[in-house]
Length: 535
Image 1 (cartoon, rainbow, N blue to C red):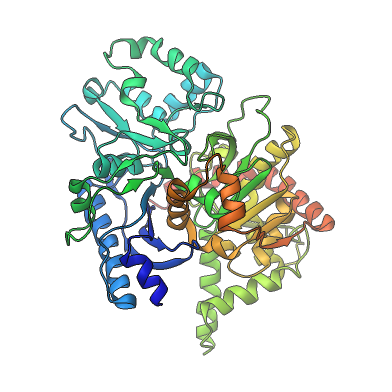
Image 2 (image 1 turned 45 degrees about the horizontal axis):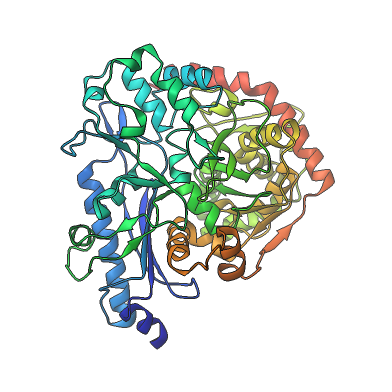
């Protein structure tokens, strides 16, 4: 305790902050990369004129409350205040659209990754670039605004992401980390910056030519992990810490997206490594050895925090429907007078699911609370089906819903592994699906047919990963790579507990996915028809 107090009082601790979709969290780490204090703030997006957004007032009040919560934790544990830290890192939910004029005024409300309003722009740019542009990417939002002839586009002086915006206001520097930049505009992994030829193609579009700005003028500078992202100004310090105790002149790492911090938090930044985040949504990130042979709409191409190519499979839905069913079983337990802990209910249901039929026993579920681009659904609705002669039991039922939570991920990863022949040695799992030890991990290993590891640090999440990236800025040795830094200093060779795929279970999941593919049209029609019925 005294040692931790000394680290904080001497300004040797490192601060990481991540602005997630439902929570802003700050962590303070020591010289051994352990969390010694934390703070958080809960927030929600708002629907503004049909656009999912967060107001700038909510951004700053939330960030300040989160930091104040961290200060309170430090005071309660150590009886001191923070005046200085060794480095700071800011991360946030990737993608989206924040456009500012030359007077630094926000031109339209912040458009988050959640919005699916750029289908026309994303499709056209994918064709022009010969490179998959997902709807949530910043360039898709910009081009859709151009197609819509929105008047604000003419006045754009700077376009950035949420993490890039916070970083800009704290340091005065218009820059983002390369992983974050890769969710704004395609990156050339050879040059480690925006893809020049694709920029030229964008500027040659007829509807773009009438504007007097160019992408290289309005996009943030691209920086690599380990490069200095800027220095905290005195004004920036006051923005973050309303108590006025925090001093300026602190180095900041390049701001990163939540994908980059997830890779860092799971030690999966080297080639042939990958990670899967499985919670409300699900996504896999696999660091590639070679470029993909063709464009796949199911695969997003982003980068690690040092610019290495990463294939990403993103599913909008994961555990929400599964959680709803577990909640139903909890209600039944209470009806019987059982005071069962929710974690125990999850544990017993998940563990029992491993006794179920390897192919789900003829049961089938879609967990689609919303649309799923990977399987071509613009809208979704949770749906459970079974054959009349299916064996309806509890183990098969929960196993089916566990399969459903990873089905979209499997479909995308099958393209990556089976068609593109990408190779990965280990996938690192993190998120709520892996809370019950061994179950979600085993199901994922069987789904992807690769070894899956879960480490204790995976639970620390994005803000811890961002703090580690800030540590890399000030603690790396000369010529030390991020992969080396993580392996030798942060994780110390710890690979976590590894579960290998089971051959028979892999076959069972493949059988399940065959049925799933055949029933996608049923899900599509159900979503369309039920939408009208439930209005």
